[in-house]
Image (cartoon, rainbow, N blue to C red; front, side):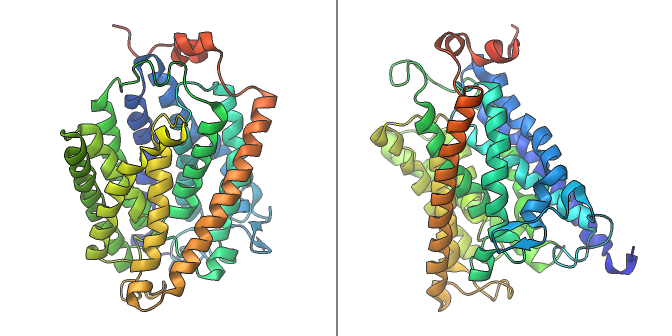
Length: 411
Protein backbone atom coordinates (compact mmCIF):
# COMPACT_ATOMS: atom_id res chain seq x y z
CA UNK A 1 0.00 0.00 0.00
CA UNK A 2 1.12 3.54 -0.73
CA UNK A 3 -0.07 5.52 2.33
CA UNK A 4 1.19 8.82 0.92
CA UNK A 5 -1.52 8.68 -1.78
CA UNK A 6 -4.30 8.47 0.82
CA UNK A 7 -5.66 11.66 2.33
CA UNK A 8 -6.94 11.03 5.85
CA UNK A 9 -9.43 13.90 5.72
CA UNK A 10 -10.92 12.76 2.41
CA UNK A 11 -11.12 9.19 3.65
CA UNK A 12 -12.92 10.15 6.85
CA UNK A 13 -15.28 12.38 4.88
CA UNK A 14 -16.15 9.64 2.40
CA UNK A 15 -16.75 7.09 5.15
CA UNK A 16 -19.11 9.48 6.93
CA UNK A 17 -20.85 10.24 3.63
CA UNK A 18 -21.31 6.51 2.98
CA UNK A 19 -22.82 6.05 6.45
CA UNK A 20 -25.21 8.94 5.82
CA UNK A 21 -26.35 7.42 2.52
CA UNK A 22 -26.82 4.04 4.21
CA UNK A 23 -29.08 5.74 6.79
CA UNK A 24 -31.29 7.00 3.98
CA UNK A 25 -32.64 3.51 3.25
CA UNK A 26 -34.09 3.02 6.77
CA UNK A 27 -35.31 6.62 6.45
CA UNK A 28 -37.08 5.69 3.24
CA UNK A 29 -38.56 2.68 5.04
CA UNK A 30 -40.11 4.98 7.65
CA UNK A 31 -41.25 7.52 5.05
CA UNK A 32 -43.00 4.83 3.01
CA UNK A 33 -44.14 2.87 6.06
CA UNK A 34 -46.10 5.78 7.48
CA UNK A 35 -47.92 6.36 4.20
CA UNK A 36 -49.57 2.93 3.96
CA UNK A 37 -52.38 1.41 6.02
CA UNK A 38 -51.39 -0.07 9.38
CA UNK A 39 -51.91 -3.66 8.17
CA UNK A 40 -49.11 -3.17 5.63
CA UNK A 41 -46.59 -1.11 7.57
CA UNK A 42 -44.09 -3.91 8.30
CA UNK A 43 -44.17 -5.33 4.79
CA UNK A 44 -43.49 -1.88 3.38
CA UNK A 45 -40.68 -1.18 5.83
CA UNK A 46 -38.96 -4.53 5.33
CA UNK A 47 -38.88 -4.15 1.55
CA UNK A 48 -36.66 -1.09 1.89
CA UNK A 49 -34.67 -2.47 4.82
CA UNK A 50 -34.00 -5.83 3.15
CA UNK A 51 -32.54 -4.06 0.13
CA UNK A 52 -29.49 -3.31 2.26
CA UNK A 53 -28.92 -7.04 2.67
CA UNK A 54 -29.51 -8.42 -0.78
CA UNK A 55 -27.81 -5.56 -2.66
CA UNK A 56 -24.86 -5.70 -0.27
CA UNK A 57 -24.15 -9.29 -1.24
CA UNK A 58 -24.73 -8.66 -4.94
CA UNK A 59 -22.37 -5.67 -4.86
CA UNK A 60 -19.48 -7.76 -3.57
CA UNK A 61 -20.09 -10.75 -5.82
CA UNK A 62 -20.45 -8.92 -9.14
CA UNK A 63 -22.34 -5.62 -8.87
CA UNK A 64 -19.43 -3.25 -8.31
CA UNK A 65 -17.44 -4.85 -11.11
CA UNK A 66 -20.29 -4.49 -13.62
CA UNK A 67 -21.00 -0.90 -12.58
CA UNK A 68 -17.46 0.46 -12.28
CA UNK A 69 -15.11 -2.25 -13.49
CA UNK A 70 -12.93 -2.12 -16.62
CA UNK A 71 -15.07 -1.00 -19.52
CA UNK A 72 -16.65 -3.06 -22.28
CA UNK A 73 -17.68 -0.71 -25.09
CA UNK A 74 -18.89 2.09 -22.83
CA UNK A 75 -21.94 0.01 -21.92
CA UNK A 76 -20.94 -2.21 -19.02
CA UNK A 77 -17.99 -3.22 -16.88
CA UNK A 78 -16.39 -6.64 -17.10
CA UNK A 79 -16.11 -9.10 -14.19
CA UNK A 80 -12.44 -8.60 -13.42
CA UNK A 81 -13.39 -6.96 -10.09
CA UNK A 82 -15.89 -9.71 -9.17
CA UNK A 83 -15.67 -10.72 -5.50
CA UNK A 84 -13.86 -7.35 -5.15
CA UNK A 85 -10.69 -8.85 -6.57
CA UNK A 86 -8.20 -5.99 -6.71
CA UNK A 87 -10.48 -3.60 -4.79
CA UNK A 88 -8.60 -2.99 -1.58
CA UNK A 89 -6.68 -0.45 0.48
CA UNK A 90 -4.86 1.22 -2.39
CA UNK A 91 -6.57 4.24 -3.92
CA UNK A 92 -8.19 3.71 -7.28
CA UNK A 93 -6.41 5.31 -10.20
CA UNK A 94 -9.78 6.45 -11.55
CA UNK A 95 -12.33 7.04 -8.76
CA UNK A 96 -11.89 9.14 -5.61
CA UNK A 97 -8.13 8.92 -5.98
CA UNK A 98 -7.23 10.09 -2.46
CA UNK A 99 -9.17 7.43 -0.53
CA UNK A 100 -8.84 3.63 -0.37
CA UNK A 101 -10.62 1.98 -3.28
CA UNK A 102 -12.74 -0.05 -0.84
CA UNK A 103 -14.14 3.18 0.64
CA UNK A 104 -15.34 4.42 -2.76
CA UNK A 105 -16.82 0.97 -3.37
CA UNK A 106 -18.69 1.17 -0.06
CA UNK A 107 -20.00 4.66 -0.87
CA UNK A 108 -21.40 3.50 -4.20
CA UNK A 109 -22.94 0.41 -2.59
CA UNK A 110 -25.24 2.65 -0.55
CA UNK A 111 -26.55 4.27 -3.74
CA UNK A 112 -27.23 0.87 -5.27
CA UNK A 113 -29.07 -0.23 -2.12
CA UNK A 114 -31.61 2.59 -2.01
CA UNK A 115 -32.48 2.70 -5.72
CA UNK A 116 -34.63 -0.47 -5.99
CA UNK A 117 -36.13 0.39 -2.60
CA UNK A 118 -37.50 3.59 -4.13
CA UNK A 119 -39.51 1.57 -6.65
CA UNK A 120 -41.36 -0.34 -3.93
CA UNK A 121 -43.54 2.68 -3.18
CA UNK A 122 -45.27 2.26 -6.53
CA UNK A 123 -46.55 -1.25 -5.79
CA UNK A 124 -46.95 -0.95 -2.02
CA UNK A 125 -49.65 -2.98 -0.28
CA UNK A 126 -50.06 -5.63 -2.97
CA UNK A 127 -46.82 -7.45 -3.78
CA UNK A 128 -45.45 -10.81 -2.64
CA UNK A 129 -42.18 -10.66 -0.76
CA UNK A 130 -40.78 -13.37 -3.05
CA UNK A 131 -41.79 -11.27 -6.06
CA UNK A 132 -40.16 -8.20 -4.57
CA UNK A 133 -36.95 -10.13 -3.91
CA UNK A 134 -36.59 -11.62 -7.39
CA UNK A 135 -37.55 -8.33 -9.05
CA UNK A 136 -34.96 -6.45 -6.97
CA UNK A 137 -32.15 -8.81 -7.92
CA UNK A 138 -33.01 -8.81 -11.63
CA UNK A 139 -33.71 -5.08 -11.87
CA UNK A 140 -30.52 -4.10 -10.09
CA UNK A 141 -28.48 -6.45 -12.28
CA UNK A 142 -29.93 -5.58 -15.67
CA UNK A 143 -31.10 -1.98 -15.23
CA UNK A 144 -29.29 -0.18 -12.41
CA UNK A 145 -25.79 -1.52 -12.98
CA UNK A 146 -25.62 -0.76 -16.73
CA UNK A 147 -27.12 2.74 -16.37
CA UNK A 148 -24.69 3.41 -13.53
CA UNK A 149 -21.83 2.41 -15.81
CA UNK A 150 -23.09 4.63 -18.65
CA UNK A 151 -23.18 7.72 -16.45
CA UNK A 152 -20.46 7.33 -13.81
CA UNK A 153 -17.86 4.83 -15.02
CA UNK A 154 -14.77 6.47 -16.49
CA UNK A 155 -15.52 5.17 -20.00
CA UNK A 156 -19.33 5.16 -19.82
CA UNK A 157 -20.88 6.35 -23.07
CA UNK A 158 -23.16 8.97 -21.51
CA UNK A 159 -20.29 10.39 -19.49
CA UNK A 160 -18.17 10.60 -22.64
CA UNK A 161 -21.08 12.28 -24.44
CA UNK A 162 -20.89 15.02 -21.81
CA UNK A 163 -23.97 14.21 -19.73
CA UNK A 164 -23.80 15.54 -16.17
CA UNK A 165 -25.25 13.69 -13.19
CA UNK A 166 -23.40 14.65 -10.06
CA UNK A 167 -25.12 12.37 -7.56
CA UNK A 168 -27.82 10.30 -9.25
CA UNK A 169 -30.66 12.20 -10.89
CA UNK A 170 -30.49 9.95 -13.95
CA UNK A 171 -28.94 6.84 -12.44
CA UNK A 172 -31.21 6.72 -9.40
CA UNK A 173 -34.29 8.92 -9.57
CA UNK A 174 -35.61 9.03 -13.10
CA UNK A 175 -34.38 5.45 -13.58
CA UNK A 176 -36.39 4.21 -10.58
CA UNK A 177 -39.25 6.59 -11.40
CA UNK A 178 -39.71 5.07 -14.84
CA UNK A 179 -39.53 1.57 -13.36
CA UNK A 180 -42.16 2.60 -10.81
CA UNK A 181 -44.53 3.75 -13.54
CA UNK A 182 -44.18 0.48 -15.45
CA UNK A 183 -44.57 -1.56 -12.26
CA UNK A 184 -47.69 0.32 -11.15
CA UNK A 185 -49.33 -0.25 -14.54
CA UNK A 186 -48.22 -3.90 -14.69
CA UNK A 187 -49.43 -4.92 -11.24
CA UNK A 188 -52.73 -3.04 -11.38
CA UNK A 189 -54.64 -1.08 -8.76
CA UNK A 190 -55.03 -2.01 -5.13
CA UNK A 191 -58.24 -3.74 -4.17
CA UNK A 192 -60.85 -1.04 -3.53
CA UNK A 193 -58.73 1.73 -5.06
CA UNK A 194 -60.94 4.71 -5.82
CA UNK A 195 -63.65 3.41 -3.45
CA UNK A 196 -62.08 2.62 -0.08
CA UNK A 197 -60.01 4.86 2.17
CA UNK A 198 -56.25 4.65 1.66
CA UNK A 199 -55.20 7.32 4.16
CA UNK A 200 -51.66 7.18 5.63
CA UNK A 201 -51.73 5.47 9.00
CA UNK A 202 -48.88 7.50 10.59
CA UNK A 203 -47.89 10.83 9.11
CA UNK A 204 -45.55 11.39 12.05
CA UNK A 205 -43.56 8.34 10.97
CA UNK A 206 -43.42 9.67 7.41
CA UNK A 207 -42.22 13.12 8.49
CA UNK A 208 -39.51 11.46 10.60
CA UNK A 209 -38.52 9.37 7.58
CA UNK A 210 -38.39 12.46 5.40
CA UNK A 211 -36.16 14.16 7.98
CA UNK A 212 -33.78 11.20 7.95
CA UNK A 213 -33.73 11.29 4.15
CA UNK A 214 -32.89 15.02 4.24
CA UNK A 215 -30.11 14.38 6.75
CA UNK A 216 -28.67 11.50 4.73
CA UNK A 217 -28.90 13.45 1.49
CA UNK A 218 -25.98 15.64 2.58
CA UNK A 219 -23.81 12.53 2.28
CA UNK A 220 -25.55 11.55 -0.94
CA UNK A 221 -24.69 14.81 -2.71
CA UNK A 222 -21.64 16.21 -0.93
CA UNK A 223 -19.96 12.80 -0.86
CA UNK A 224 -20.26 12.55 -4.62
CA UNK A 225 -17.42 15.08 -4.86
CA UNK A 226 -15.16 12.20 -3.81
CA UNK A 227 -13.16 14.41 -1.46
CA UNK A 228 -13.61 17.01 1.27
CA UNK A 229 -13.23 20.01 -1.03
CA UNK A 230 -15.00 23.16 -2.18
CA UNK A 231 -17.31 21.32 -4.59
CA UNK A 232 -18.44 19.10 -1.71
CA UNK A 233 -19.14 22.18 0.40
CA UNK A 234 -21.15 23.81 -2.36
CA UNK A 235 -23.11 20.60 -2.99
CA UNK A 236 -23.85 20.33 0.73
CA UNK A 237 -25.28 23.85 0.87
CA UNK A 238 -27.37 23.81 -2.32
CA UNK A 239 -28.86 20.46 -1.25
CA UNK A 240 -30.43 22.13 1.77
CA UNK A 241 -31.52 25.24 -0.10
CA UNK A 242 -33.28 23.32 -2.87
CA UNK A 243 -35.12 21.14 -0.34
CA UNK A 244 -36.23 24.21 1.58
CA UNK A 245 -37.47 25.95 -1.56
CA UNK A 246 -39.37 22.90 -2.77
CA UNK A 247 -41.02 22.39 0.61
CA UNK A 248 -42.28 25.99 0.55
CA UNK A 249 -43.51 25.84 -3.05
CA UNK A 250 -45.26 22.45 -2.64
CA UNK A 251 -47.08 23.61 0.51
CA UNK A 252 -47.88 26.94 -1.14
CA UNK A 253 -49.37 25.21 -4.17
CA UNK A 254 -51.57 22.86 -2.16
CA UNK A 255 -52.63 25.69 0.18
CA UNK A 256 -53.64 27.81 -2.80
CA UNK A 257 -55.42 25.03 -4.68
CA UNK A 258 -56.97 23.09 -1.81
CA UNK A 259 -57.16 25.55 1.07
CA UNK A 260 -54.98 23.74 3.62
CA UNK A 261 -51.22 23.26 4.12
CA UNK A 262 -50.40 19.68 5.09
CA UNK A 263 -47.60 17.85 6.90
CA UNK A 264 -47.48 15.32 4.07
CA UNK A 265 -47.06 18.18 1.60
CA UNK A 266 -44.15 19.59 3.58
CA UNK A 267 -42.41 16.21 3.74
CA UNK A 268 -43.09 15.37 0.10
CA UNK A 269 -41.99 18.82 -1.04
CA UNK A 270 -38.67 18.51 0.76
CA UNK A 271 -38.03 15.12 -0.84
CA UNK A 272 -38.97 16.50 -4.27
CA UNK A 273 -36.42 19.29 -3.87
CA UNK A 274 -33.74 16.83 -2.79
CA UNK A 275 -34.46 14.66 -5.83
CA UNK A 276 -34.33 17.59 -8.23
CA UNK A 277 -31.07 19.07 -6.93
CA UNK A 278 -29.26 15.72 -6.91
CA UNK A 279 -27.91 15.72 -10.50
CA UNK A 280 -27.11 19.45 -10.35
CA UNK A 281 -25.75 19.66 -6.82
CA UNK A 282 -22.08 19.74 -7.77
CA UNK A 283 -22.56 22.15 -10.67
CA UNK A 284 -24.88 24.97 -9.51
CA UNK A 285 -24.87 27.80 -7.00
CA UNK A 286 -27.42 28.78 -4.33
CA UNK A 287 -29.64 31.02 -6.48
CA UNK A 288 -29.94 28.35 -9.15
CA UNK A 289 -30.74 25.83 -6.41
CA UNK A 290 -33.61 28.00 -5.20
CA UNK A 291 -35.12 28.08 -8.69
CA UNK A 292 -34.65 24.32 -9.12
CA UNK A 293 -36.33 23.70 -5.77
CA UNK A 294 -39.24 26.09 -6.31
CA UNK A 295 -40.05 24.53 -9.68
CA UNK A 296 -39.65 21.00 -8.31
CA UNK A 297 -42.14 21.56 -5.50
CA UNK A 298 -44.91 22.81 -7.78
CA UNK A 299 -44.12 20.42 -10.64
CA UNK A 300 -44.09 17.28 -8.49
CA UNK A 301 -47.22 18.33 -6.63
CA UNK A 302 -49.10 18.83 -9.89
CA UNK A 303 -47.71 15.57 -11.28
CA UNK A 304 -49.65 13.60 -8.67
CA UNK A 305 -52.80 14.33 -10.68
CA UNK A 306 -51.39 12.16 -13.50
CA UNK A 307 -52.51 9.09 -11.53
CA UNK A 308 -56.18 9.93 -11.94
CA UNK A 309 -55.79 11.04 -15.54
CA UNK A 310 -53.95 7.93 -16.69
CA UNK A 311 -55.66 5.49 -14.30
CA UNK A 312 -52.65 3.91 -12.61
CA UNK A 313 -52.15 3.30 -8.89
CA UNK A 314 -48.72 4.57 -7.86
CA UNK A 315 -49.40 4.07 -4.17
CA UNK A 316 -46.73 6.39 -2.74
CA UNK A 317 -46.20 8.81 -5.65
CA UNK A 318 -42.81 7.53 -6.76
CA UNK A 319 -43.49 8.60 -10.36
CA UNK A 320 -44.45 12.15 -9.39
CA UNK A 321 -41.61 12.75 -6.93
CA UNK A 322 -38.71 10.69 -8.28
CA UNK A 323 -39.66 10.33 -11.94
CA UNK A 324 -40.79 13.91 -12.56
CA UNK A 325 -38.40 15.41 -10.00
CA UNK A 326 -35.44 13.50 -11.40
CA UNK A 327 -36.34 14.47 -14.95
CA UNK A 328 -36.61 18.14 -14.03
CA UNK A 329 -33.31 17.93 -12.15
CA UNK A 330 -31.50 16.43 -15.15
CA UNK A 331 -32.87 19.13 -17.47
CA UNK A 332 -32.20 21.86 -14.91
CA UNK A 333 -28.57 20.75 -14.78
CA UNK A 334 -28.40 21.54 -18.49
CA UNK A 335 -29.85 24.98 -17.77
CA UNK A 336 -27.97 26.10 -14.66
CA UNK A 337 -24.63 24.23 -14.59
CA UNK A 338 -21.65 26.54 -14.31
CA UNK A 339 -17.93 25.88 -14.61
CA UNK A 340 -17.46 28.68 -12.07
CA UNK A 341 -18.87 26.24 -9.49
CA UNK A 342 -17.13 23.13 -10.82
CA UNK A 343 -14.44 23.41 -13.45
CA UNK A 344 -14.72 19.68 -14.15
CA UNK A 345 -18.33 20.13 -15.27
CA UNK A 346 -19.70 22.28 -18.08
CA UNK A 347 -21.61 25.51 -18.57
CA UNK A 348 -25.34 25.17 -19.17
CA UNK A 349 -27.80 27.13 -21.29
CA UNK A 350 -27.87 30.18 -19.00
CA UNK A 351 -24.09 30.33 -19.06
CA UNK A 352 -23.76 30.22 -22.83
CA UNK A 353 -23.89 26.52 -23.71
CA UNK A 354 -27.30 25.36 -25.01
CA UNK A 355 -25.74 22.08 -26.22
CA UNK A 356 -25.72 20.77 -22.64
CA UNK A 357 -29.54 20.81 -22.51
CA UNK A 358 -29.64 18.59 -25.60
CA UNK A 359 -27.12 16.18 -24.08
CA UNK A 360 -29.13 16.03 -20.85
CA UNK A 361 -32.31 15.30 -22.77
CA UNK A 362 -30.56 12.45 -24.59
CA UNK A 363 -29.63 10.94 -21.23
CA UNK A 364 -33.20 11.32 -19.96
CA UNK A 365 -34.84 9.76 -23.01
CA UNK A 366 -32.39 6.87 -23.31
CA UNK A 367 -32.77 6.04 -19.62
CA UNK A 368 -36.55 6.21 -19.85
CA UNK A 369 -36.59 3.83 -22.81
CA UNK A 370 -34.07 1.38 -21.39
CA UNK A 371 -35.54 1.31 -17.90
CA UNK A 372 -39.11 1.08 -19.17
CA UNK A 373 -38.52 -1.81 -21.57
CA UNK A 374 -36.23 -3.82 -19.28
CA UNK A 375 -38.49 -3.28 -16.26
CA UNK A 376 -41.49 -4.65 -18.17
CA UNK A 377 -39.52 -7.75 -19.21
CA UNK A 378 -38.26 -8.30 -15.66
CA UNK A 379 -41.79 -7.97 -14.28
CA UNK A 380 -43.03 -10.58 -16.76
CA UNK A 381 -40.22 -12.96 -15.80
CA UNK A 382 -40.83 -12.40 -12.09
CA UNK A 383 -44.56 -12.96 -12.45
CA UNK A 384 -44.03 -16.22 -14.35
CA UNK A 385 -41.36 -17.47 -11.93
CA UNK A 386 -42.84 -16.74 -8.49
CA UNK A 387 -45.89 -14.56 -9.01
CA UNK A 388 -45.81 -10.82 -8.36
CA UNK A 389 -49.10 -9.92 -6.75
CA UNK A 390 -50.65 -11.40 -3.63
CA UNK A 391 -54.10 -12.99 -3.71
CA UNK A 392 -57.20 -10.89 -2.97
CA UNK A 393 -57.56 -12.65 0.37
CA UNK A 394 -53.96 -11.89 1.37
CA UNK A 395 -54.38 -8.29 0.27
CA UNK A 396 -57.52 -7.94 2.40
CA UNK A 397 -55.82 -9.45 5.45
CA UNK A 398 -52.77 -7.26 4.96
CA UNK A 399 -49.25 -8.09 3.86
CA UNK A 400 -47.82 -7.97 7.38
CA UNK A 401 -49.71 -11.10 8.34
CA UNK A 402 -49.98 -12.80 4.97
CA UNK A 403 -46.33 -12.36 3.99
CA UNK A 404 -44.48 -12.16 7.30
CA UNK A 405 -46.82 -13.51 10.01
CA UNK A 406 -46.26 -10.34 12.04
CA UNK A 407 -48.15 -7.17 12.88
CA UNK A 408 -46.82 -3.64 13.06
CA UNK A 409 -48.78 -2.74 16.17
CA UNK A 410 -49.87 -5.09 18.97
CA UNK A 411 -52.13 -2.79 20.97
